[in-house]
Image (cartoon, rainbow, N blue to C red; front, side, top):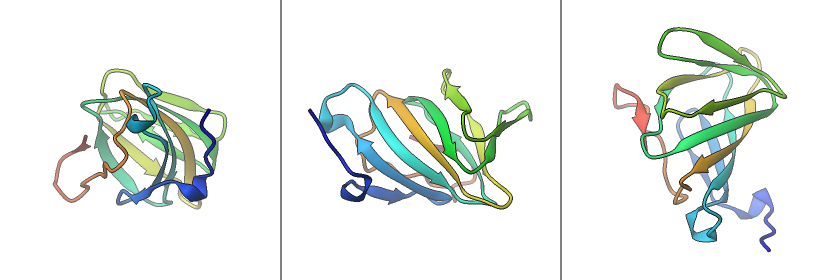
Length: 124
């Protein structure tokens, strides 16, 4: 059995927020779990070429914009899943940060960070 407190895990700065790596590959679960904070007022082009991801909003608000320009509001109780390695814009709320619980498969190693300065989507 694994018991973890978010204060005891690796938290990475990913450019538009933070990602606390609650479960990672070395834990042997076959998936990873993160608590991700998306800072208010941010807009980041992201893509996971190696992972599928599902995110459940537990606090704050924001949006996900698909590559067709459709904006999907995200608020507590809303889940979105990137089931086709979908490039997308992750958008922080106008007035508040958004907090997500995210599951990745295959699992993250735990040290990955986005590169938001490269001009394209940040992918890992």
